[in-house]
Length: 278
Image 1 (cartoon, rainbow, N blue to C red):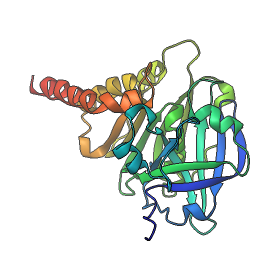
Image 2 (cartoon, one colour):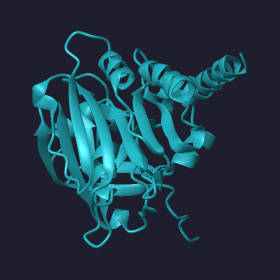
Image 3 (tube, one colour):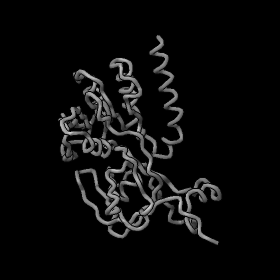
């Protein structure tokens, strides 16, 4: 019987590089990426698949088969990461990981990754790319959104006006961001403040240029919710000019956030609709 096609991609670590104090870049390659393809978005993402060491998984491995036949507590753990870059000619996939010591699952894996290590993944998905016809661009996020922001800056046309606000722990977390755009980049240092507080203050204080704005705002769900309300109600940005959602939620892991994200988003939309109606 012919073997069923894999429902995932398999990347092999080619090299790693620390690009800032808390971010490591992992470049993957190999024949297991032969079916990988992106479609022009700058926020493409993959779901990394992490197996439990002491669990016997189906052979050939299949995420779908695991979910159909295994107890939920044995299902592979998934972690969502933005595609920093994809080179189809070299067949190289670049992912950037935030690392805070032993905290989390994917960060410690990336910090210890070495050539030859294997990483399974689902995807890619995605939905945003900067509109070349926009009057100006607003790019806002914490570290989790930095790969998408960097990819978006690289995609902007020469001379395009962009206001970029990125919140990181401190000066050692800044990165070189390449762009042909007229990008006004502001690095905000979090220090001891809650995640996103500096971003909320900076966006509220920003003098918006004239013209149609295309905005990308992503990161921790709490501050994203506050900024969505500000941008929709106070700045009057329509939803079709705004890519905005919580990549993660403080206090819960990726599985926990995925389990409640739809309900969270529905509540945000309901609160927003009620505020607009009033």
